[in-house]
Image (cartoon, rainbow, N blue to C red; front, side, top):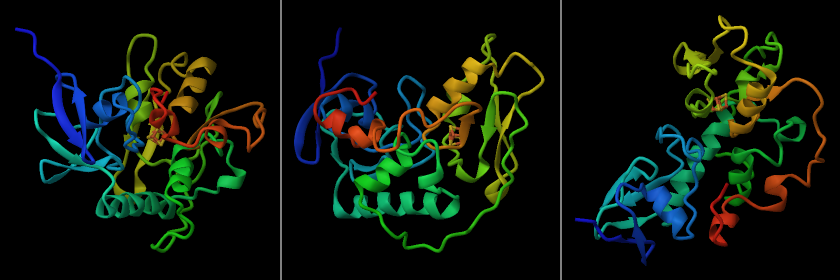
Length: 237
Ligand code: SF4
């Protein structure tokens, strides 16, 4: 028997979801943006960044990994949740070195765009002034470890022609580093490097070559602040 749409409420508004849809997906389809950083288009959710934290059925959960259920009451924009989300964004800024004015991803960076959305000026936490060595040894890609937010989008979304992982991680905690499998010399082609840069929400993966072709001020989030496409009925892509 085919099931009908699942009715739930988000921030007091009645919405409908398909069976198996996550809170983030269902909200997006109903024109409400719930911010995320690790969530990306068709990739399976990872729930690593917790930016999409919501209160669902009375519990604090990550919206990208929580399926909607009948009658579920979800809140995503209460003062408590907004403050929590801002705190997570601020922590990402102080943990890395995100020098926006000198970053090629400025204007296309989701972390920067979220900071603008939440009007973050000075983080409430002290900067850790990390100084991780930048790896420019690959032919087509620079790894800027100081900006990696460990969202796993590159690990989940960039594969070799044979479907194998190209990106991975080594170490733990503050020493965690993104790694690239260099055993297959064809794995990280110029095209794959471009895909990796596009999939990375920040400026941690940068292709080598010509940059700044689109001036800062005319880039994606300069023109369309993050989330506003969804709020106007777009799909956020
Ligand atoms: S390199 Fe970019 S895409 Fe990969 S984990 Fe770090 S921030 Fe995410």
